[in-house]
Structure formats: structure tokens, C-alpha cells
Image 1 (tube, helix red, strand yellow):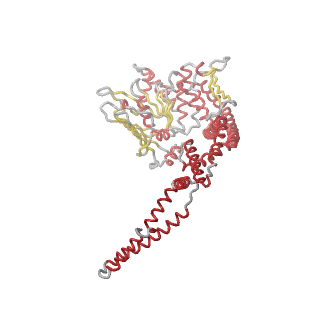
Image 2 (cartoon, helix red, strand yellow; image 1 turned 180 degrees about the vertical axis):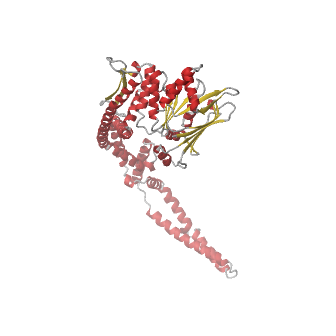
Image 3 (cartoon, rainbow, N blue to C red; image 1 turned 120 degrees about the vertical axis):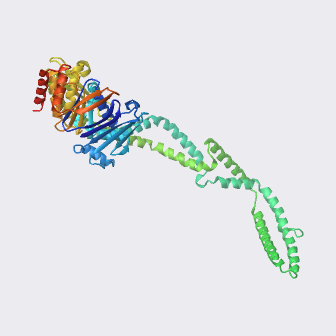
Length: 556
């Protein structure tokens, strides 16, 4: 439960430190005193959007701190543990809002995102605003209320998972069916292209080798002519060959080495050169002897190169990439060839998933219908107590089996009411007045709160439009709710305020800078505040006696 609310420089609140207790607490005060800012502070601390208008004039920032006891919040305690934020016995939440509208959030003194803050807050506090009866007209909200009352969260999660699988499979199936007509033409084209590529003998395809062989055969005459000339120069010209001239040099150096031993190393180098020239000449001779012109081979190579280059241009590729291109085309053709198998697999899978979804959806619908009867009974009984003695509340659950699957099931859920006997039940928006909607809304909130685990519930003037004996019943209902959770209620009704275990009074001080303060009323101050709410400006002894009587009755 919420133990402490601390506010610094938030709007009209300069500084506030408020301790809260178990049971039912009420906030009262004159209109405009600042009761709403306390709920604003709670909303900000729990993750509402911030802006610079919340910062008190002349202050650099506003700060809200909350302290929660987790003894009655096992879900919140587990969330903190799962997110490595459970350092403290209690839970501390801090929200800072800066002048520029930026903000920071902390859980147990560690910075967190607003998403994390909201996730935790939902496990700690539930706020019912003064316009809750308007959201009651929304079909999604009606479904949400029924599902919460029915404890359908696990079943809804299972349905959503099945729905997502079905949706993904069905999307792929539709895309495959849509593209199947175009695939036939693509398959024909791929087969033609692969047949053309396989003519190149891709298993033994080596474009570089073909290009090199073509280049050699195309220039063979030049190779033979110049090769023979070089053979003459190197070795075969007996008068002027390189080998002959080296022989002369070696003979001369042999004679000179007798006089200068240093020339021996040079003689050795030239001897090696002569040997290498002779070997090179022999290899060149053997090479030239093996070369033979082959016009037919040259013509075939030229034809192959032309075919390869044409195919490369057609595919906007390079000759070297053609083998890899063939692999890619074969992969695509194989995928198309197996698309019929995939189509059959997807069809079967989608049918199975749809069948599973329909089974779960039917189970959800049965659960909703079963609990709708309970909710009808509870709310009908309560609205009779709240001043609609002839009222009947109905929850219609219509299972739409032919509808496309949805993540929330295939039910249409609608709240209806019959305010007078003999008249057919109609949707809330068409029947209920503003005051009736407020009472129905309160009845729903009380009825659907019984099984909730949220330890703290806040009601912001949900009793608007109610008075007299009905207001007293509302107060009793809220007090009953506080037996197993903490209730904080903002009210203008003395009948509701008198039911509280703790009475907080909000007062606006305008001596200097406008500011609001909150004080905990003692028993005598409680009587005076209830009397003020009963009697207005002139409070008589009778009014005080009436207030004291109301407090005494409520405490029994």
C-alpha cells in the first residue's frame, strides 16, 4: 500500500509530506483548494506525461516521491525482482519534472524508463477518475472490464499467441497464392536461362583459361617468328650469339685471372650465366618445336568467347560470375518447383492454427458468458441499492464465429441497461443519464474490484451527481472495499467522507504566493469538516450534531 506521498514545488504545492494509512482515506476541501493536484502528483509519479506547466513558478524543478509497502503487493515484488530493482524492503518511486518539460524517473534510486515505471505502477495503484463513466461507453473498455472480472488474462495471452502464428502463416499463404500465377512465367524463363548456361559446360568452365588459350593461338605466328629470332640471338648464331660472345669473355678472363685472382669471381658468375643461357635456349627450342597452328580450335574459342560475352551482357554479369549465377537461378527454380509443396504445407498449418484458435476462442466466449451472468447479478443488485430500484444491468456476449480471428477473441461484448420495468434493455449511451451513468460506473468499479490484487485504489469524485441516502450507500461500499485494500477517495459528499478511517483536508493559502496544504484531521476537526460539507457557511449546533451522528454511525 502507499505509505507516503512527498511533493516539492509542484504547481500550487510548495512542500507536502503526507503519510497514509490502511483502510479508507478521504480528501476533502473547498472547490479549487488543490485536491486535484494531489492526484496529478500521483499520476506523474506513476508514469503520466509531464510538461513544464507542472513546475511551481520560480522553481527549477518539481519532485514527487512515493513510498510503498510491498507486503500486500506480491506481483509488484516479483516484478522488482525480475528487473533487478528489489534492493529495499519497501519500494521507493521518484519522478522529477524540469522547467523545460523534461523528466526523470527512479525506482529504488535507480533510473528507469517511463514504460518500466508504468508497468510497476499498474501492480501498485489503480486510479478511477471522475470521468470513468464516459469510458464505460466504449466497447473495448466494456470487454476489458468483463475479462478482468473473469480472470481471462492467461487465456487471452494464449489466444493472442495462436492468433499471431495464424496471422503470420495466413499472410505468407496469401502472398504465395497471389504470386503463383506469375511464378509459372518466371519458371519458364529460369529453365530457358539455365539451359543456355549449361551449354557452356559449367562443370569445367574456366573463362580465364579459354581467354588465355585464344590469345595464344591468335598470336601464334608472332610467337613463332619472334621466338626463333630470339633463339638465334641467344644460341644458334655461331658468330654473334650471346652464348658465343660469353665464350669469348670467359676465355679472356681465364687468362687474366692468372695475373689478378680477384677476377675469378666474375669468371664464375659468367660461367653460370652461360649455362643458364644454354638451358633457356634449349627450352625455347623445345617450346617452338611443339607449337602448331590450329585454325579450327581458334575458331571454336572465338565462338565460345562470343557466346560467353553475349550471355554475360544479357544477365548484366561478368563471364567469371556465370557459374555462380547458374547456382542462384537453380536455387530460385528449385524454390518455385517446391512452392506447391510449401503452399500445401501452409494451407494445412493455417487450418490447424485456425482450428486451435477457434477452440480457444470458444472457450473464452464460454468463460465470458458464464461470468457475464455473475457480473450482471452483482451490478444489477448494486445499482438497485444506488437509487435505480427498477434497474437491470445486462452483459451481452455474442460469439461471431464467421468473423476473421482477432487477438482478443471473436466476441462482441456490450453493456445494456433497463432503467424501468417493461422496457427493453438498451446500450448505456442510449438509456442512462449522466447521474445514472455515474452510479452504474461506480457499481461496475466496485463489483470488478473484488478479485483484483492491486493494493491501492484511488477514486476521484466518482460519486459526482449522487446525494442523500444513495451517497451514504456509496460511502459504505467504498469502506467495504477498504477491508482488504487501501482506498483513497476525493469527495464533496459528507455521507462518503464520514465513512473514512483517515480524513485529509486540503486548504489553499493565498497570503503570499498561492499554495495548498494538506492536514490530517483529528476527531474534533473531522466533525467540523463534515458539518461544513453538510451546512455550508453557517454551521449551527444542529449541523455539528448531525455531523457527529454521521461519524458515530459510520464507525460502528
